[in-house]
Image (tube, rainbow, N blue to C red; front, side, top):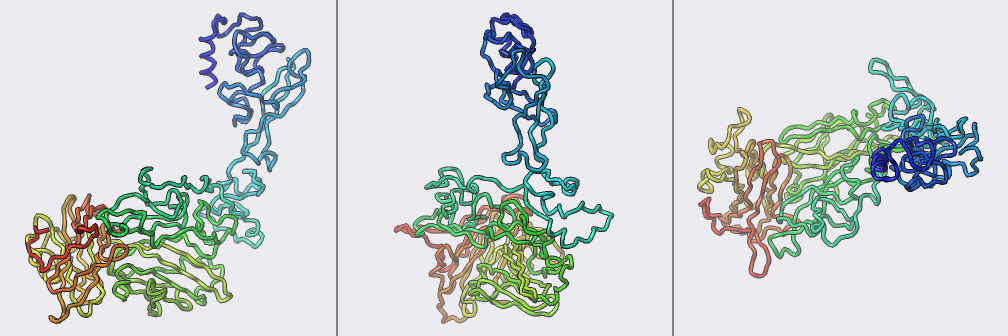
Length: 621
């Protein structure tokens, strides 16, 4: 910038014949500040002129501006205001001698360029310049500025390189009072004094004003902020943002700056309208559930308060590692988790077999509706099974030494897993993770609350292929043990595609489900549910729920909170037209467009669509 300013000055100053001379007296030497000029001259418009002359232009830099690069350590100490006039009393001598700007041999401190509060802390200091024999100031030299202690070399040198008053405090627990061992070298055993001096103050702390909260707004939609978070921190997510009732989205109700940091994890939000007066909903009316929000930071190797800092100032060797990757699970396959890889893996205590382990999983929507958990949670060693807790919203098993557990899911989705380890001396260590159950392709699940008295059958048809409900669509009769339909090549020799894994009547009460492993891009499907009383005299009001998953992510829920429960579904041959789904992308995609079948009444209320009796023609939608 200074070079550009200098060039412009040369062209614009009519009194200067060339950039190398001056018409007002003086040496005419090219300059950027007074320091570049001989004794008795000042820098004016890029040229050294006799002191007292206006030089044909403004006396820029007359207060001793120091140009970029003059600092001897290359850090740019001194002012660098791109040619702007500065008033820096520290960089000039107010009592200038008669024969020059300064007295030869005199020294002067230059302006400190490091972060505020770090000057004269540790090795950090400002540069110093010395007056030369010709009475002009020399270069600013010897400055030391803060350096982050985030390498093994700096972590073990015994110097407070970042000038924060603490020696050797690096990032992510690098500093332990000594250098880190190489890959082929055994780490040295640390004594208590090493741990006592270990500090994990974080140098990557999030510094977002007000945690990223924006000014309060009546509608985040008007600000184009429909992003699944509470941008203005008013307790509502995406208020004013339109949505289709029953659709879901990832959400986070904490401060925007904490989202996706540390242990913080998105929950799920289901669209509703208030009070169901229109077919279009508002995300701002729905709560975010099953999210993980910031908590107090503890010694566990993760960032619990979600501020970008791991175990800040707490410890160096946490006995529990909550950063352990538990991976994902698949429906109908045992998922094993070994707690000894999480707690005391470094053998500090060697009490994993005497400590009490407690594993807890939060239930899904169908688990609550059925009153029976759709997954099994057991100890991998003793066979101890889980019990329902927390008003039937979660399932837990616990016991001394139960460090391993296995879980077998029948449904897709994301489940929150909590581990609590209690030592015999009463010390408690805890971790939280999202455990995602993933199945590729399209998965539709059905459950209902009166499964011992009513049989409800799930149906899925394919647009352009299915012509008749209960014939060439997929349902219990032909998709479980039969040979048709066959819409896609199976992904394994034994699998059907589509297929029905579970029939609630025969295997229940558990969720009935239909799977399409590799749907085609742009292909569309319809979902329906058929009411059939077990006894012909039964006329039972049934509250059915349908969950739709795309690529393992729950994209929509119908018949359950926050939408009103399905009503009027209580007669033989009733057929609930649930939704139409369009698949987007390859079979490994999790992108699909779902349109529920809703009807708006004359009074503005919205109901689900029930055919009574069922019209078997597929195109009658």
